[in-house]
Length: 273
Length: 266
Image 1 (cartoon, rainbow over the protein chains, first blue to last red):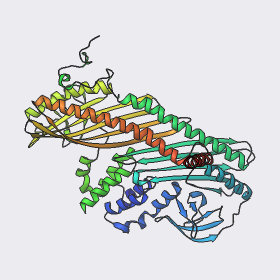
Image 2: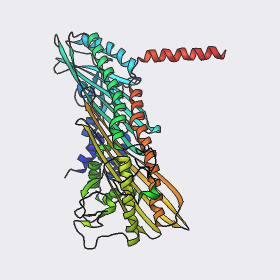
Image 3: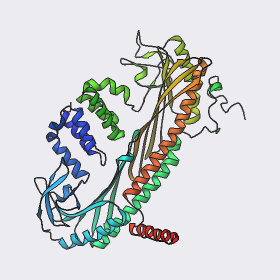
């Protein structure tokens, strides 16, 4: 049987957007261990932060930067190429400290810098509240482009997160692969969640920042349009097929009479055919 | 402490993915086994279907028709696996239960055009109580599916020529969709609403009609609410996260509009 720490870890990693602190408080009460359980959950906090693309404020700055598996250095230190800074992250509190200068060292530094610029323009045009990063990965043979956009409205019982994670091997022509995830949680008198994963696979004919970002922008637009269509189609299709709004007779049930009827007989209120 | 643990268990289940309620409930009760009984009776889960051996008709399982490891069929009033002394309703309440099952079977066919339904009643000191269960699943394409579970629990308390009804209704709705352009889309959850009302009662038959109308009105309300939250609210939040059109255009439009309003006020 799974241990308390394993089960509590799965709760931490399952926390919906913007509700990690609430889940932590529940876990502390539920296990009766209070804050004592926190250190044993550190690996879960780290996995949550890196998977969910947690953002932290750089010390002395209002800028939010991403924590991910792509920009980890070692010992819970991460780097941000745009500000050329490295920083330590406390995964349980989602805070950054001990910032240091960290010049970008990559054979593709120019591409990364122009990607940051072009992708930044794209991000600001479509995501009202987002953070993004471009990182050299896999021994400097590829780049990762990541974006996270959060909107939290706990007073209205909803929170949402949009994540886009792309990887591109650097060669003359290349294929960008990745995933877009949308997670929405609505919890007024209930618990409703939208969770999506859209795999992305785009061939990039020429590895330039402009062509990469324009193809990403098109893929993200196409996806949002597909998602919007899916809401309408599901509402008109599967949802309608589950329960009608009114019976086919367009009349509510005549409860005083209905007990006497048997299935297969006329149940339309005696009008007959 | 136990109360606080119970509250945090419910809060946790309200936050974690509703698709995984069963697994999370198991995890919680393995951490705090003392909560098992209370949680099982207050957390609604998708209903399971079983076939009644006596009548070969399907019925739904829940905590209210369970006695030990056996479940009572509403069609035969027998437990499966058989129980010598399983708890059954009094003769009067069983009569009502049979009538309600007949009526809600018509209701199910009219609104769900399929699916499975079951009604269970039990005696109270000053009246009776019951649960109306309805379940339907659809898989129109291999790549999309939907499942609806309605759980309506009510208490009817006797008053002079009246009855006081308290109804708590939960609908669990799971929807999944998968296409090339869309990838995987999962829209799952549950919503709960309550209503209390006094209604006139002439005879026992009035109870079935009263409860029928209460459930029918509640399901209509909840269907509209689910439609609003699943397809309206969720889409709106996606729009809050990402704007389809460029934000600079939207900002420029707002600025233009603001200037127009300002100039009209002059």
